[in-house]
Length: 270
Image 1 (tube, helix red, strand yellow):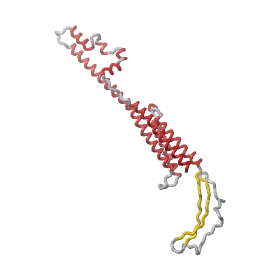
Image 2 (tube, helix red, strand yellow; image 1 turned 45 degrees about the vertical axis):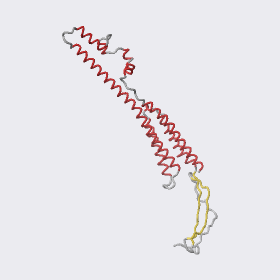
Image 3 (cartoon, one colour; image 1 turned 135 degrees about the vertical axis):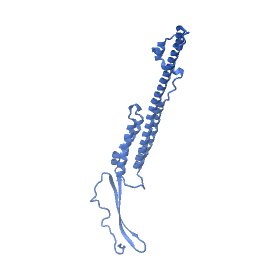
């Protein structure tokens, strides 16, 4: 049952709110208090008496900065350094995933400290979500770079196999020609058969020299193959990956600086 102001009227015994039982909090600082006695209408001629108490609180910045903001900023900066790690170390993707998991843990901690509401999203939550998204992009970029790095090795291996297979076919063809030369008709003399064999490998080369290349031929093998066009040009996947590393480092560093400075400035002004 509600009593109107004709039957019940609140009166403040003290002009201000008493702080005798107030306990200092390490996260929040009490700025001011206000006690208001007012009457509000409920419709019609009746009115109700009420007391309003207002508390003005301010978050202590040291707790938030030292326990949440600075660790997140340091972790996000370490995430940018994933593009400095060489692919040969084998730690590029593992490093990025580790930082991504650390940011996920910090985001879960912050979400547990904040009230569960989606109407007014705190800036620290938005900043953490942006850093989490940025970390995910760095992991994807690192995976692409590692793939391009190993793609060159696979291409080179395929080309070597093709070159060896072509050389094997060439040797088999020469051996067949030698066999066919020795299987000449009996009317041909041995001297004519020898001339046919020598003509297959050059006038100044013998059969043993043709089957086993000399040291000079081994040393100039790559140059000879390139002149003859036996090996196609190797795609520079590793060079492309290094350029992507450099460009990604600059882009993600600028995005990180813009987001961090914007968040710090907004926190300082609020």
